[in-house]
Length: 244
Image 1 (cartoon, rainbow, N blue to C red):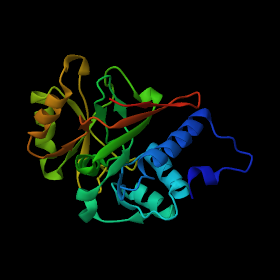
Image 2: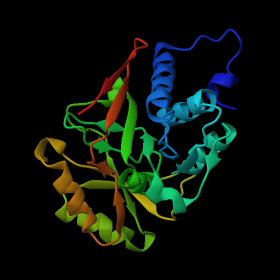
Image 3: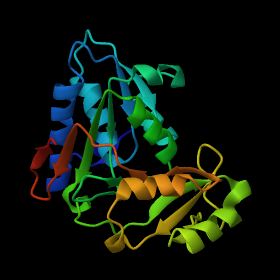
Image 4: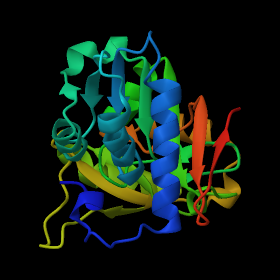
């Protein structure tokens, strides 16, 4: 049962929820109900989940869509919506991926990985013919302020922390669960939420490559591929589409 269906009958959605729903309807119309779209990648987060819910309603009856999911959370959402979830063998065939973002800077680089699915998300971004990003307006910023999630092999955690601190000017913090245990990704790795002084970093792509040269780092939550479309959900209930 999704969040909308859990609400009482007299519940009135907030302006932001209206914006999320309306942009999701537009995304389904523009990027799903096209005759050449057969395989869709699904990122994680509330905006991607809303697009999944609208796919349940808005997909044309005669159209069969296969979905490659990046997290267990979005898998459950897709299955609840009656969508066909397929395995990683279909990744090379992805026509479009829908995803969210933790932050989007003025050059349209992104920080992702707050939900822990950055590795799979980056893989489906690479494979997809088109990338569609949906995010709240407050996540569009001039300079990054969020920590960068960095997925790390548990075997390498101590040396990666040292390298990030001494050679990459980072301030890593091991992501923990409320119970006091390290957060473990679906791939069996740890995440270091790492702060950088982005006022001194002019080339985000260069920083992404630099970090990935450190042995033990599996993936970095800096996403530098431009999306085909960015949806911005505004607090007044409207949404904007941005094409670069």
